[in-house]
Length: 433
Image (cartoon, helix red, strand yellow):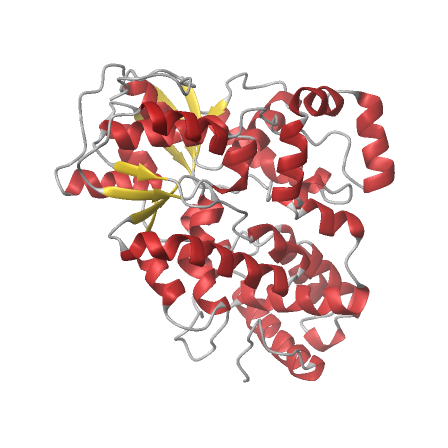
C-alpha cells in the first residue's frame, strides 16, 4: 500500500491499484451505502460485477469521482481511516482522482469559472440589482443553461451591493472598542458578497460578548477548487489565507469563521497543502463561530441576557461542520438562548458549484428531499443551518415539495435576534453592545 499525496505527481498505475484496494474494502464494509451518490454508484457497479472490482470500467471510475462533492462524511463514517492498518481516506482518493481527470480531460470553462468566487462576487456585487433581476428571469436562466451548463432552476443567493467588507469599513468607525478577547474574523467570499447579514450578526454577537473583532484581508478559502482538482488554486488560496491570518495569531487573536466550509479548510486542509508550521499554527487557533461562543461560555464569558426566546428550531447540521468533530456547538448555543432544538444530521446536497451544474442539479435536489422530509416532521418555529448554501437548498427543495415556507437562518442570526440586537444593522449604528 502506497500512501496517496495530493500534491505529488500522480502515477496512474499506483493510483489504480490503490483505488481497487480501497473499493474492495468498501465492498466488504458498505457502511457508507446511503451517504452520497458516489457510494450508490460504486456499490451498484460492484454488485453488477459480482464483487470483482477489477471489472470496473474507466467510465465507472469517472462517474464515481464526478458524483463526489467532497462532503467528507465518509471519512468520519469509515472505521478504517488512519491509523488503522487499512489506512483508508476516501475523500483524499477522490481529490487525487479529480486532479488526474483534470489533467487528462481538461477543465471545462464553466467549471473553472464557477470556482472563481471572488471574481464572480466582485463583478456581481458591483451590478447587484441588475444581476439579481437577471437571475430571476426565465430567459436569462435558459441562456445560462444553454451556454454555461448552469441549471436554469438552480436558485442563487442574492448578491449584495454593499459587501460585508464595505459594511465593516463603516461599522468599525462607529463602534465602541471591546476590551475582552480578540478575534480575527474570516468571513469568506460567500458572506462577503451574498450572505452579508451572517457576517454582520457574527460581529454583533461577538461584540455583545466584549470580543474585540478585526477583519483581516479576505479572499476565497479555496474549497470550490477541490471540485475540479485544481491543486495549484488550492495551494494559492491556502498561502493567501495563512499569510493574512498568521500576523493576527502572532498578536494573540483567535480566528473565528461563520461558515463551515471555510473553517474546515483552515482547520483541516491547509496543513496538508503547505510546508512549514504556519498553517498548523493558524489551524490550532481557528474556531467556527458557535464553537467559539461555546468556548466563551465554558470560560464564563458568554452573555446570557437574552430577551427573546427563539422557540422550537429544526437545525440541519452541515456536513463540513460534522467533519470537524467539535460536537453540536450550534445546537448548544441556541439552547442557551432558550430554544428547543431538533437536530437533523442529513446532507443538503448543495456543495457550491456542484449542484449548479446541469448534470447534477436533479441529483442534488433528490438528496435535499431527505432533509426536507425530516424538517417537516418537526413543528418548528424556525429552520437553521450554519451553511447559507445549505439553507438555500432547504428553502428551494421545500418550496418544490410545496412544504416549508420558513426561510432557513444561520444560528448566529438566531442568537443575535435572541439578544434583541437589530437585524441587518446599518453600518452607522452606534451603541450596539
